[in-house]
Length: 307
Image (cartoon, rainbow, N blue to C red; front, side, top):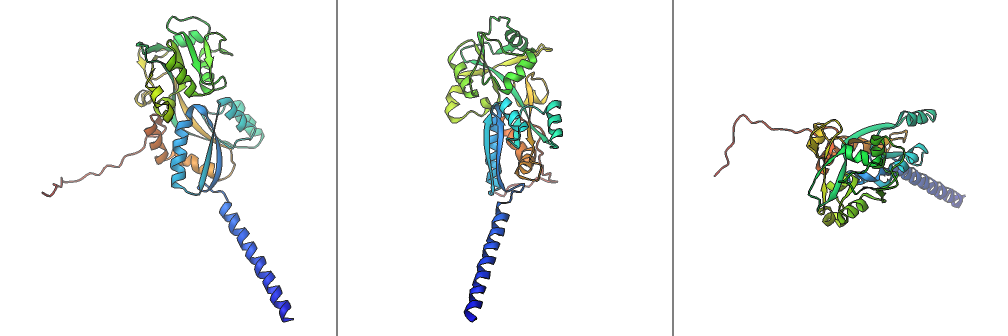
């Protein structure tokens, strides 16, 4: 009887030990706004700034792991609508039709703007003319030849830059002649650096924050000053010209969260829209959606250094 009691006690002890471990593991693996793992599908044209945000976020919250998956804008939106991606970063807000589709599924996307971005026109360094009129580019996309433009070069047929320029030109498809597309912004930059007369169309973040292998290539291109459709002045995609609203190819960046619960997507969105995230945007060369504050110490008297 004593042996039976000891055996029973051992079984109970093992059972409780296993249950406690399972409970502990469940609590450890539970996702919160600052802990867990998350895949974020990102518009490829703004991958650089997102990589910076993720690096600082993970360096601050050690239990968080975010995987960045760069894709074209069309793929990003399709993944979101088909619920293959729960959190995405785009260069535009959702359309009314897209929001209606989420409403039917009883999903309420949380959309958070966090930066002012821009599309840049680039040319070969050998081209001394660094000015270009937006109307000339639009005319070229509409099939009207231009003596200054040998060809337009895009990153991807399904990218946000192509969609943006098609909307401006009011065309359904890009011309088959004189317009070229690759797969990435780096390929566009490299092609333009090696071919005179070509105008590249890229996300400006790729110029301000080139990958290490592209640093030398970046020195072989110019970012062009652009004259808008209703302006006589030329402006560049700098923080100052974005701030005063003069650069004609500006756009905003959004993080869209469809997790439906208080998970890591919410924590990351709060981070990039918060003070630290906005300072990262400022340092990247883009314009923060909210200007980070400064704390000034005002003294009533000047304290002289001791000799």
